[in-house]
Length: 273
Image 1 (cartoon, rainbow, N blue to C red):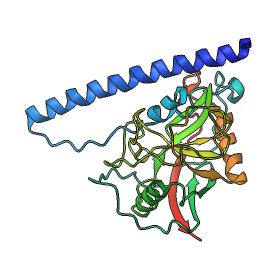
Image 2 (image 1 turned 60 degrees about the vertical axis):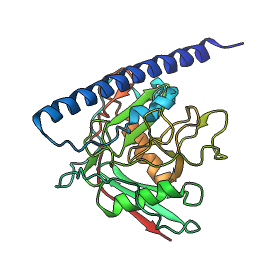
Image 3 (image 1 turned 120 degrees about the horizontal axis):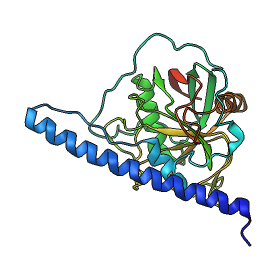
């Protein structure tokens, strides 16, 4: 028998999914409209695929954005003091590439993604053997400084519990211009459609193989369909940083919005060990 709480969570996820689908449809219409305007004006627009967290979390609710249904534990209705420092000087890059970078990593080696953020350092042990395309892409983009000076633009605190990052535009619709295949969707850590706390996974548009640069970090177990490539695990110290960010809540008070904490990735590096 389904409990009242389980039913509440189910309805929250379904509502979030509907919202994400509407947002995705609106973005698609906007892109079509803008491209038509651009062609009339003779303007060349360099557009990147909207990999956006909504996609990520969309799966969520389908988990459309990886953090769609976060429980009220993050105090979404009251704005807490900003626990983070000011961002380092510099601007995010918005370069794009036509195709996925050639494979250059050693699939048998260990790789660590280090995110030096305004809220503290978040280390991620990456799964190169299970998600080689994803790790290779992060190695390439981090080497280009693609993630440096970028904001983590989305925090979900109801239904799913995730922080979404990786979009240099900060809008949720940016990406590197190429997509990478889905990987590791049968990871042993994903049980009963739950992405456990500490998981780092790719966001997407809701379509297969549509991941780009946006990713989400799970700070509390979140029920999502296995549609988002899990490619890393956050360290214990990094989890403390994530929980600090979550505790500050998000801007809308509705469980899904920009984090109240000023979360900026000052520098992202991928190291091989």
